[in-house]
Image 1 (cartoon, rainbow, N blue to C red):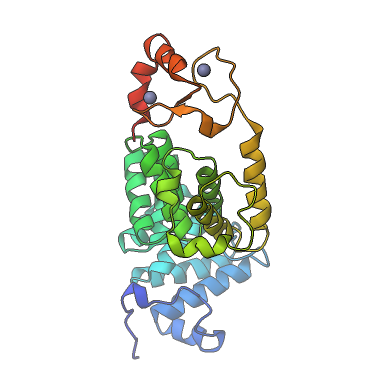
Image 2: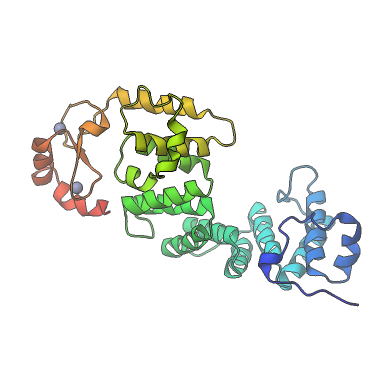
Length: 315
Ligand SMILES: [Zn+2]
Ligand SMILES: [Zn+2]
């Protein structure tokens, strides 16, 4: 029997059906890792009826045979088999097994497994207690490898300071990284925050001159936003609407209407001033909290407690 050893995981096929089903059974029986992965997925999938791949919550002889094949493939170093086993145990709510498989696949270098492991550590699933710094570390590794949802989760951690030192700037930078990697929600949020001139959004979301083309067709009319910012807004809107379910121009109009509404942005308690976001001065230290003017800023600093809290809104 001549068994092909598994190559480096980056050359392994993610699609279990890439091999074709005809020869797979025989080759899996011969001990070939790629075929074991394919046949394992096929059996688990079939056992699950039409509920969809990875929905195998029920146990059956077929599902168990598939799981055993996936374990064999994983034992030979097939990383998608490891990650698939993590998903399988996740569906069955066997969280300790799931986290063990995600860890193996993450340590082998698979970005989506790093993200899955991050979620488990973040939520404390399958482990004794949540480990937020470790979760952030795995999100970071996945995000650096181009995983959009991991970058978006890291954005959320920086926003609230969970597992990392709170930083609005870093949160915005990870939001951009998520957007670059096609995370639709991050694209739309980045566009909206640039339009509303939230701290760091415009500098971080800037996309350069070439994107000016996006605003050439009379789109700029009626927007009180600098042209280069609007170019960036349109760039991210179009990317966020790439699936076609939303219209970027309708999104732009929604931003405009929001910006015209006015709101109570002054952080000084009791202040009733209503206005547009950009009319409020942002605290020069934390660049997060806004005031209607110097008077309110001074009051909130000396008697409102912002002096103590300002540092917690670090850059
Ligand atoms: Zn005020
Ligand atoms: Zn401040």
